[in-house]
Length: 288
Image 1 (cartoon, helix red, strand yellow):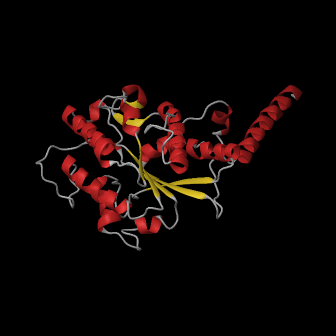
Image 2 (cartoon, one colour):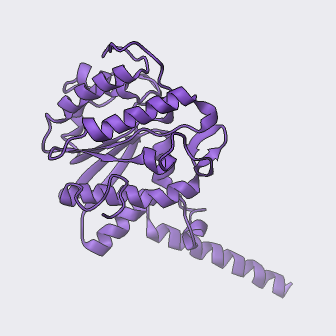
Image 3 (tube, helix red, strand yellow):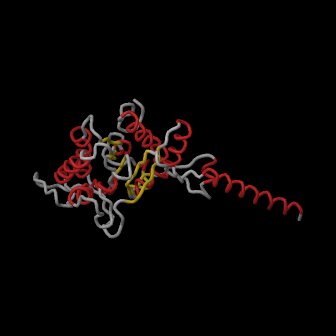
């Protein structure tokens, strides 16, 4: 009986110590002060996977009690080590209701350009609202952005149809809008890729063409718009999300291991854009 009680006591003590360590770390709770450089990350599920990353070592254990989030953790450590004051937060954009779970080129154009102003559009913040609160705004598309349809050469900027021509016209309008806020930095992810089973060779080729256009033609040097090349991290030069990086052969969400590897690259790219206008990292976030 004595040995049993001692064993139970040891287990309880271990669990209590882990909870204490987890609580003291407070890894995911960043509280900005008035002098903080504030960063907003607008995303959906793929962005959330990268945000959370993959815990290792003791963090895997403490994560049972205090959810591990790789990106806030990275910035917390960076601030402590480098004496910086970077605050990053994230939110779903747009929300499922009332606007709908769509974050493709048309939707950013629709909310930020077509319905610009100082009032929210269907409960979603416009750029005029966001730039008052944040020094940097990061946004991305979910992987269905790659289901790009064949179409005539003409574009309809007001259409939510996923065509290469529509994407380009909407991106050009977005660029013009982003340039109206020179004191705010914008970091845009290149398109998230699809696994091979969830697209066609033709759609995948159009997605590659769109990404190449964004990198080589749409993006310009010397302005307030920057890229993080998520697409090429996922595809490594191909046209599909590599199967070893995916949750499953029919699921285009990246897995935790991939997220754990690229989350620091995302963070490094953010910091480099803040500090050197992206001069010390490549588009993937790796040091030059």
